[in-house]
Image (cartoon, rainbow, N blue to C red; front, side):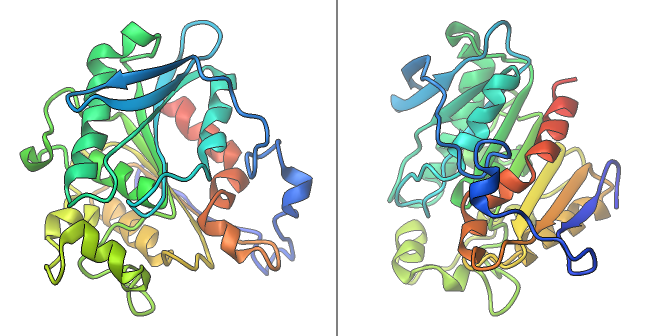
Amino acid sequence: MGRAATVVVLAMIATGCLVPDPASIRGTLGYLYEAREPVDASITWGPRNLGGDVYLPRGTPKGTIIYYSGGGFTRWVTYGTDAALAHVRRGWAVFVPDYRLNTRFPAAVVDAVDAVRYVRTKGDDHGMNEDHVVVMGLSSGATLAGLVAVTNDERWFGHDRNSRPDAWIAAGGLFAFDTAGGRGGSWRTYPADVKRDWFGPGQPVPARASALRSVSAGDPPAYLIHGEDDYVVHPDESTAMAITYDALDLDVSYDVVSHPAGQAERYHVAGAFGANQAEVERFLDRAAR
């Protein structure tokens, strides 16, 4: 694939290996972290006075990860958050911002964009690194990370020169709301009320809601992770994004992760981040240079 691009399929049948049972890797690969980092500050930020938590490493942060929580745009879930917080121990500041829930598109995207702008312009006030900013998310949070990263020329989302991240990481993201390719369409597997609430009853899905439609030259490096048997969002979503990035010779890495027997459901939640923790670390190290 393109610059620094890799497609790595873990634990494939050819190797005869499986990802270890979650109990054997808990706390080491970030699959299901049990110990949270202490919150250094709970802040009110941005033009809408939203909440957010700041986690700081010892010493000067090498960069800031903005982690968008998943939850189908109707709630925030903690799945995957601890995998992001693991990087506090490696010298990263982590900011977990709130964004508006149960609101019409593009409210959540505007808030996600505002979070980058806030870190770029006010992060130093809270001990965060303003110079190296990576957006990261899982599920709907991954969808937000993609929209923030590749729609930087879209004034419709409130972007300006301070709202561009240096890189983005997405696990289980949905990047084509309008077509949602693969096995009948990922978006069509979502509950009807989620689609209705985000776009409006009977309303068409606008093309600008799909990050895949906005990829262009100059977009920041991406690391995409997807469970091969993701039961909520089909991996074709990440595959299509990786192919689109590669076609423009953009920096993209893409890992498809197998799952332990009987654990397929976990690979839409925390599993993808955990199984690929070492690769996430390497990607972040490149982003901080």
